[in-house]
Amino acid sequence: MIIVGAAFALFARADDWPQFMGPGRDGVSHETALNINWSKKPPTILWKANVGLGVSGASVVGGVVYSFGYEDGKDKLRCLEAATGKPVWEQAYKCKAGKRMFDGGTAATPTVDGGFVYTLSHIGQLFCWEAATGKLVWGQDLAGDLKGRKMQWGWSASPLVVGNNLIVDPGGEGTARVALDKSTGKVAWQKGNERAAYASAIIFPHAGKTAVAFFQNEGLIAFSPESGDELFRHPWKTECDANASTPLFHDGAFFLGSGYGCGCTVIDVGSGMPIVRWKNDSLSLHFQNSVLLAGKLYAVSGDNRGTKGELKCVDFKTGVTAWGVPLGVAYAHIIVAAGKLLIVTDQAELVLVDPNPEKYVELGRMKVHDQATRVVGIPSFANGLFYARSNSGELVCVDLRP
Image (cartoon, rainbow, N blue to C red; front, side, top):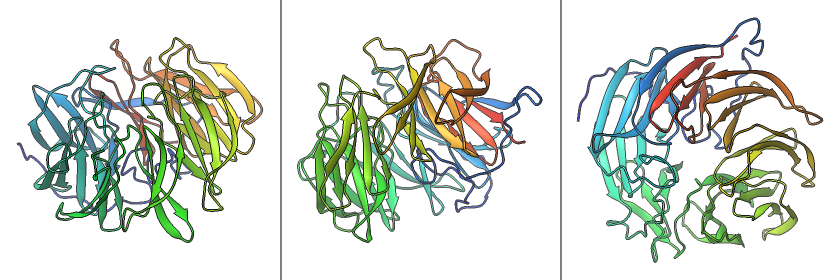
């Protein structure tokens, strides 16, 4: 383990990106400044860095980037200067690459909260690190300590902080969902018998309180973060037990989507128990995410059954598809910044799109990775800078400041 850094701000700001899919785990940045005139001011790549094999996203807090990847028989957590890509500190521990349905390496995105960084390996190694120095604070093993059951493609759901608890899903008998004291790693509660999730958990309001939802292999399961007690569930099975696209919550309802011919649905939970608003095959989400703007869902539909990625605009309330445009790729992830769509495709292109509910409006596109490699991990955006990481480990920082 190597420490080469200095101290910096420990707490996330409104313009940071502290976890998987951003501050609200919905893929949306609330920054308002963005360069959208790429013909007049072409975006530039500020820096590139090798961060190791994997599909983990980058987390950005207080002017530094936390990136997680596999290299030389170890998982490595790197802390880099956001503006330059220069190393601040690095920590590592032994882990196998574990090639799965992609090149292998890390899958879960680091979660940054209150001066600490939480990481989870694909074989269940959970660690808490000091954000400023990289010093190891505590560790747990989801497979051993928490009696979890490793899924076919390993653990990929990013740890979730709710209050004083860090919530993970070992997927064991009696330990399907577990809350740990985020400062000490001690078990606060453990409940359930369901298998673990590939999709990351989200927070949502329910009956005047904060609740958490897992999109697990059996479907959506909502529970109390204080006790782990189940609130409700909605079945959603795929033939491969692979619900991997993170749900969205809006206006008292959840949007769920999967691949393998399952399609998508919106279920209303405002009455306390799930009621299906609509269900159709407008979107096929193998693992790619969706975002919501002005009542419209935007996602790149496609899966591993040979269907090519098609950017679609779907009405959240009705499920009606407004339009769809083929992108010529298999997969792509979307995030939102300054009200625009930033799409990174698996062929390493960054595409800027105006979210027009009536038609596809492309504002610009650029190549972000030179080498022939897939891009499966979700991108990040903070303080006007866009971060994309290739499966082989090249992290790029693109300047999108106006």
